[in-house]
Length: 401
Image (cartoon, rainbow, N blue to C red):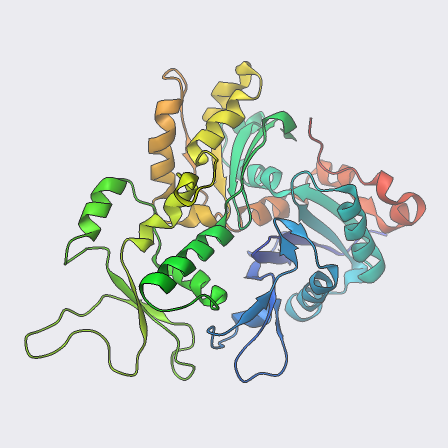
């Protein structure tokens, strides 16, 4: 029995990207549950997109360090996604699901059991998000893309991975991981703001909103630090916190200068977080993890190490086709800073190209949506009948060497 449609689900540690293959862009929503002020029931997944006071939210995530660790919670989020958000019949649908790199067999087995036995999907195909990001990039006809060759830098929630790919196969020996992602950046901003301005140590969900709204990557750290020390720093901003009534999510504003005889700042009832050099010191961790005593190299060196770990004949192709994906790569200035730091590490005779998709958060989903129409998808798919007959051994995700 052929499924009527295929659901593409990019299940990230921070957000889920879900939609029907071949249709419009996916719906992006938090991969968590939380309880808002004044509500007795938990908000599940996409329900957090509704206008609720984002302060004092206590979020529970099913994923930790990139892997699902709470299957009951993940089942609840997926169930709401399929029934309420996408409004589909899972028994008449197939599922294309992303999985983390080097996923353990026990986790793959648990995934299949949930997909086929709990939800009743007709088919399942699993694939690392990095390969789907390359699939999306193939819309650009370059020599590297046609050879299925790229280095995908996936700056995600839990980790940052540099993934070399050749002939649409992940080169396992070259994969490099930085144990730092969006979660660490949020926690670092939370500590800086709580020490310097207002205590937000219990407001992780709110601080994620603040980070996405104000942070940027500095292209000249020393100059920006000097500018931030000035009384009229160009980097000063205020984030007005939610009040639970008219302002539910908070907003960014420039601080009002004090006028003689009239104090500057905000109205008495508004509470705001003052931000200055925190805006660029937080994402700077991606380039200098040693700032928080993490003994690892930054993303530029991560890419360099990943390329050097594979065959020398591939170095030129990999450097010519670096693809950025993941939420942290959306930070303004990230691509330019990476290009600036990486160019001195790359031999002069190699071309260096870095591609930032229009929306790095959903580029893996978009690649999955187009991948469904290829013959490779059919070859990799496990049907429900095959699962019931042969189980886990039949499922062969996109291979790696």
